Length: 452
Image (tube, rainbow, N blue to C red; front, side, top):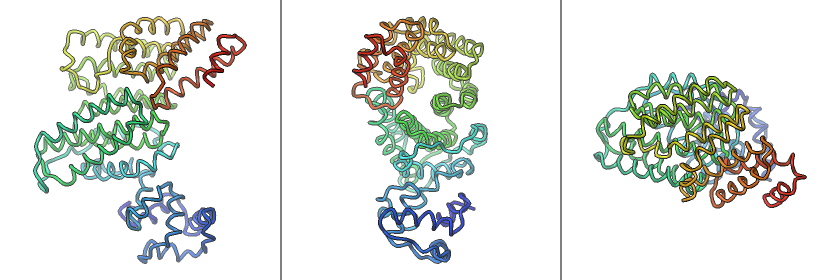
């Protein structure tokens, strides 16, 4: 059944619900809201889906609750258009054709329903990334558009500059502060794509900016702990990147999605994403990006417990970065501005920690500190500092250095102040759990009490 039909009929089809099933569920919510029972008359659903009859306001409010849609959307959009916001949570995002028109349609739905999706913690049903990678490989690139006011290169340039600022604001302010702004930027780009005319080159650049805006939405949703919304944004971002035929934004999106996949139990999928991104490395021609991609591949292998593959990938990462040392930063894509030698050592230390090698991890963390933490001290990357310091403290706990562990943990807490990030908060929670086993030690007991 096509999503272009009645959204309620589409939702019933996707869920495998009969009219009676749906009215039972809807009636329970209707009664919980204090509106009384709903008669289980299957013709009622037929009138809603085929007879042009709109449910009364109380029934629509119950539907909004049932499908996780903010109530204000009921008045912002006519029936049944607001109910389409529930449809993005099914497999259409994964199975629709990979065309520029579908890209814009799905991006628009994800961006519009992002607020509702942020209330959901579950994952989109992405059992494997292989079908998505196949879609990227066969996607139709964007073409010129002749309707609307003509725009030139200055418009995508402005979007690219705004997105560069958003990336850095996320570093300093945290995901919770940036997500809404990224969504607003994505909606503005989509409006431009749908209402102006442009050449093929400008159109592809606009799709590239839409992909990056969606990628930032995905990253900030994930960093805020909203994994279902993040998955939707990542899939939509890859669709836009494929429409842009842009290897940089495609590879960068894959790398960031890989972080989420290996951090949430799918290191194999993460490896597949990064391996696909690495196949674009020659076209990109940036040793810095290549180094970043190999470091992400190493993290995926370490999460899977693959020591030899981890070391192999890290070797390629450091070799690639050595080739980047004599290059000007302007020669690299802006999206890898954060990559430096200290960051690579921090990632290598994290790999060693995953593999149960705390001494090796501390060696990498020590090598990173002078190059990386000086920048963090200048408040450029406080979230990253907090996460990496928490990992260093974890390594010290494993080695029995409880004084050093607590000292480092206190530094991590200092960097977390004022930064909205579920990941950094989770890192501290995990560290506290490890320290609890040593709660009888005075220095540990004091730290646990102060950070309760």
